[in-house]
Amino acid sequence: MPEPAATAPPVAASTAPAVLTVRGPGLSTITDLGRPAGSSIGQMTGGALDQYSAAAANILVGNAATAPLLEVTGLDFSATIDRDLLVSITGATADVTVGGHPQPQWEPVAWPAGRDLRIGRIRAGFRIYIGLHGHVDTLTLLGSCAPDTVLGFGTSLTVGDQITVHGRTPAFDNPWFGAPVFRMGARPDGAADAAPARIPVTDGPDQTEFGTTATRLFTQDFVVGEASNHIGLRLASADSAPLPRRQTTTEMLSRGVPIGAVEVPAGGELLVLHRGRGVTAGYPVLAVATRTGLARLGQVRPGDTVRFVHTTVDEAVRAHQHRCAALQRLSARVAAAFEALPIPTHFT
Image 1 (tube, rainbow, N blue to C red):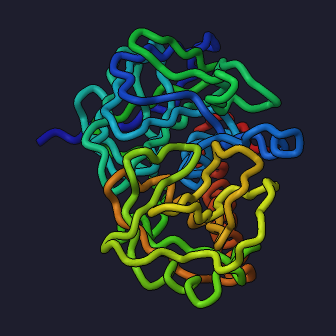
Image 2: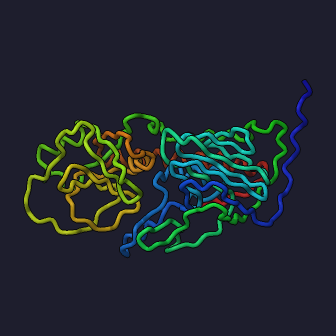
Image 3: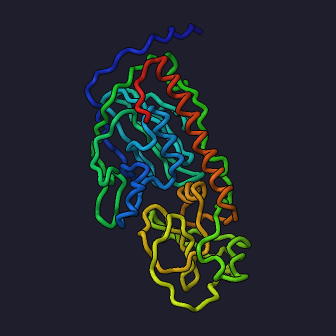
């Protein structure tokens, strides 16, 4: 069997932007990590529901973690490109191909011009993130392209939509198409495949008002309802066990609520507010999902089972710091590899 030809050094690509054409949009949108300052002026934060996977997708292609990218929810996605582009696919497990050849997730992937990128059979999660090397042309609101369904702002993709990506990705001469060019070692959250999904939460501001019923949050599993979305998840007891109940009868006024608030309205379900939540509400808040817990909730789908696990604020902070450190190490590996090729990076 003949030996493959030696890999040629990267050649400079055209400085003209790449144009991505959506062929099968599924349920997809352009987003980013959201607008954290929005709450101070009554604006929803928004942004990718799995913040860790979204940040990793951008870092893997040399972008700032906060850069625009594509979020694909549940359904198959396909697109073509007119110039070579470096991409990455993170989040849920899926079948990913470029030009019909299987490609790895959680690594940079060369997407040659004229080839089709296909993502199908999304499983072990609900959302896929596609990082695109370079600057994506898109509208912004308060510095973010994250959709806001209340204001009608945002870009939900349809068949034939085109996305312009400014940047320069060298063309790679890979003698065995399909063999990975990069091995960055990025990994999803180790708990993402666990069933039921374990969601760490801290005590909420109204925890003491639930008396001894507060522990019911941790002694049963909950099923994600079909009405769940980016605004919040509706959860019912998996075995119809009694829910936590507020023991006081004083009137509760509407007040500011955090992302991740676990609310207990009257009725047979819990509400967990996610990144599309409004900034005020009037239900008692029993607990608050941590940053890692919110990312896991971003990957559950209707019908999945979740289990709440109590944690302290200090433990939640350490878990978040551990994730931040992992992303910083990934940034360092990507920067070193891209500098050697050379591929420009846009880290901040």
